[in-house]
Length: 267
Image (cartoon, rainbow, N blue to C red; front, side, top):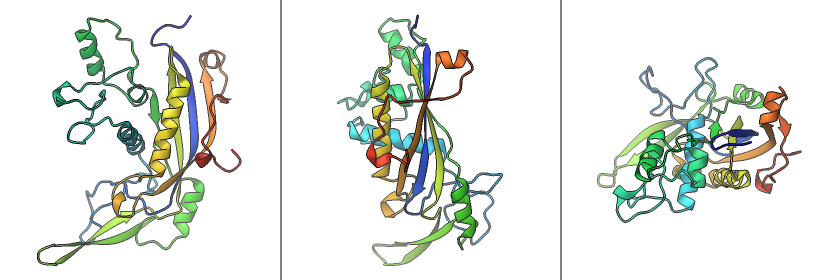
């Protein structure tokens, strides 16, 4: 018999993120020599290859989904914590653990405790998040392409932008490091399904968020040409409670239709 807070299954979504324009997700500039780029990309410290942090992808998906549903403060900035949406008094904004976006992307334990204290409830076994977004490493094909390209820096290109002073017309150049177009990254998302969850609703929200990323941008400098990507989902699989107790592997998941725009070739 299922109880509140019980994990029933995990749904794994695997696919490929492909850069359609240069991708800039900022890394640390510590240790750069004089004459280096002004903004570097994040890299794997062992291979020196660029990767897409799971935090960048998850944050972008949530932000765009909240924009779509109008869940913003008066200033138009999404607060770090979850909330119910626009309120006349910004101090009244609060998280709603039952909202699908909050269910997928997370609610802080402090927020749940605060609300339950206000409602005099004691249901602290409520899950705080359901979505796990892995870091996205470069695929073998992507690494091969980067090795073959004659790039400005190891595995990356350098884009020079110019800032022009509106008063004096003085031009100040700056250099931005980017992953070149055509590079593929391996994507893996894990969606936890708990008792009483509507898994079709949660999956639908998640895929809408990925579609929004395709029509927006990933990383920084997106309004100036960087960060256009395509996302292709190759497999959907699941592991139920029974699969874990029986030591079974991942099983094909057939309860959801992948959007045509996101289907990988042969999927």
